[in-house]
Image (cartoon, rainbow, N blue to C red; front, side, top):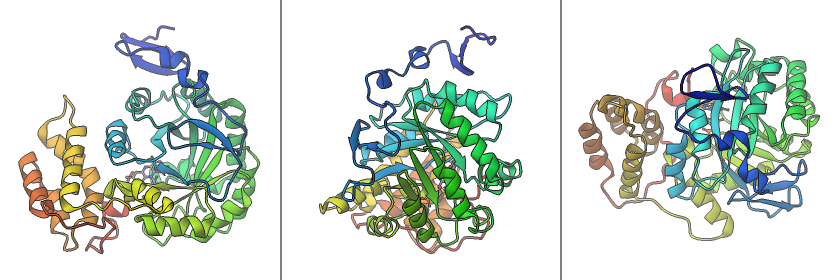
Length: 397
Ligand SMILES: Cc1cc2nc3c(=O)[nH]c(=O)nc-3n(C[C@H](O)[C@H](O)[C@H](O)COP(=O)(O)O)c2cc1C
């Protein structure tokens, strides 16, 4: 079991530091207790507390599953913990593990999985197209405390899709078919797919649904855009509805969900079993609690400027790390602030100030200037003057 690198132990392709306990690599203790165990495919088994419960598939009044979307450089354990304070989703997804012939799972993603203390389950996402490498990685990852593994069929970054991975695989359905067959055979925890509706058009969407339907997936998340549409075009909720009607497993709807009212409309319109939310949850960490409250007919939290100020300080504290200089810490927080600023004020001054700041003092003064008030904030995206290739378009490579 000992690896070739000093101070690490290797098991099933995973490397970990000596200081960490190895038990989670040897077994999934929660799975042993039946908490995250695999269940009949297609059954409705995920509950807010992460416990497994069996009810009828697609039961009409069952509370929707709420998932935090995987987002590179953002959705790690510190961010999951902050969201949890405000209610949080039912399930977290990791950013993708990059899988190829010589890959080993990224250490910083593993750390979030093994130290997850949010009380909510984690799904680990994989991206790649090399079947033996995907199977090897899936076998190793499923020994960690994960609810399941998710396969990425949507990443629109050119560096990824040009290698026929992520969204690029939507141009090669026979390969998707072969990958899913191999993964389904190897994976004993839940197996899901996160997909877009096509590469540069949705013409092949029905054929994609046929492939997905053939592999006993536990759920499928549909981001209602093509790969070429990146992040800014309107979302095709009618195609998500088609997926929900045709697939034998639950479907999660994804794309541009930013308020509780609109999220519930999308649920009704698509017939989806749940929602996956990305940028909307960075901007508004109360969003999951607001959706649940609206669903139950209870009063929803209404954050004020001062509440958002508290959220920004919580993010600052959560993203602090021993090896981070103040300047790098400010830079790191900008990944979140780029999205949050969209919901704070419409002139662009707040966004601009966040982007220019190089010190903690500058950031804190700016936050206080704009947010130290008791007026409620919707935290939905405002029409800010940003360019087409701006980071707010979500273009990340
Ligand atoms: C910064 C950023 C990073 C992302 N990283 C991933 C990723 O690692 N895996 C993935 O499947 N999708 C990734 N996505 C896409 C999101 O999961 C989601 O599908 C997309 O943002 C649309 O949902 P939203 O409108 O709720 O944000 C990323 C999106 C953003 C903005």
